[in-house]
Length: 246
Image 1 (cartoon, rainbow, N blue to C red):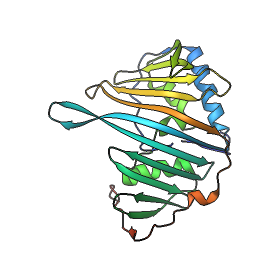
Image 2: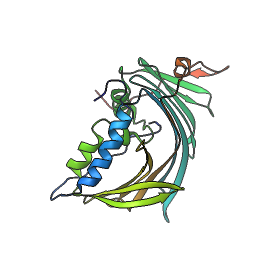
Image 3: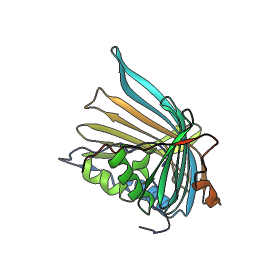
Image 4: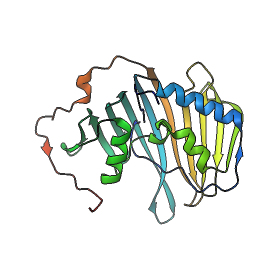
C-alpha cells in the first residue's frame, strides 16, 4: 500500500460493518478490476477533499424506521491529517486530527474533547471507533484492504453495467451475502472515484445507509493549520468517556 496516504472519510462520520459470512461465491472479474482501480487511485493520493451527503435509517419511531441526514465535508493529507465538518440530524460537529491527537467539537454546546490518537488516519479511526464508538463518514470505502475484504466476505459480486448518477456515467457494482446488499457506483473516467454507495442491512429491517459524494478535489494544497483546533471564545474542554472497559 502506498505510504503516501491511507485514506478513509471522513470523511466523514462512523465505520459501518459491511461484512457477513461468505459461503459459496460468484465472483465477477470485471467488478473486481473496477474496484481495484478505484482502490489503487485512492491509495496513491497525497491529499484529498470531498463532501459526503449521508442518509441512514434509524429506529426512533414505534411505526418504523426514521431517515436521518448529514452533510460531511472531509479534508485529508496522508498519512496523518484529517478534518471533518459534519452538520446533520445528530448535530453540528467537527473533528481535527493532526497525527498526535483527535479533537471533537460540538458547535451547539461550544465544548470540545481532546484524546491521544495513533499516528496514521486508518489506525486512528479504528482506535477511536473502538474506544468511543465515534464513526467516521464512509470510512469502509477508503480502507487499503477494502477490495480484499469485499471478496472474502461477500458471496456474490457482480458488475451491473453502466448507470447515470446525477448526470455522471458510472460503473455499478453489487456485492451480496446473507445479511447485506452493498452497491457502489464508480465514475467512468480517469479517476474511478466513488460517486455513490448504499448498504442495505437485510438482517436488520432492511435499514439503508447511503452516501453521495460530491466536490472531489484531488491532491489539493491544504494548509496544515486547518488540522489543528483552536478553541472558540468561551469553549469548554470536557472529558470524553471511553465506551470500553479495560
